[in-house]
Image 1 (cartoon, rainbow over the protein chains, first blue to last red):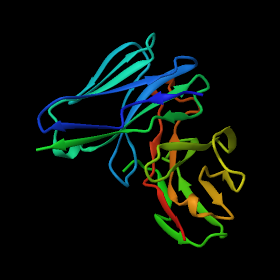
Image 2: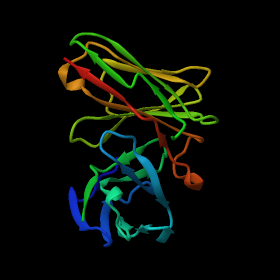
Image 3: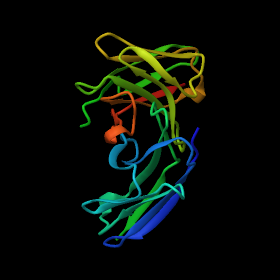
Image 4: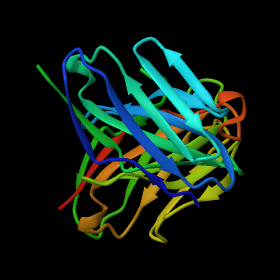
Length: 110
Length: 117
């Protein structure tokens, strides 16, 4: 199976940038996903990387390095509504499930 | 709204009882996944079905079972409930069987809150 590691918590200021790192096992990999989850709500899909490099989607960008088993999610121009947990997830070679990390709780302060 | 529908939204039941959680996937999606999320725990994969067939099993207890019906809706049955089964149970769906191919990903329902007392 896959091990997905990410920091437990981060704090940032409104308008700033925060980078959430994620490391994963590199064997049997078919894509790295990021989800946002507000407390008590459903996770919502943010981004997907399967090739090395940066994918940009508005204020959110995600980066992947397959050789290093490393990804990050970059949140720019932080808004109060961005306070949430951000979940890193990997699809294994079989592609029959996503394995999630424990999530990084981001607190945006005024 | 992801298009994945789960019922009931909230459920309170006693230890030893049995409950059934229901899920309707997004229109056109053939794969259904069940995840459990306990307080302060990450999402734990339970089981996946594709077009009626079980495809993958995760950390699903023997007291739990699931199935996907011909109309593609799925049910998760939890029996002999224990206090530790209290959690948020998510259903998710995807269009294809293999995640990651062409960016195929999963979309979550709002979840069913189960409280065992």
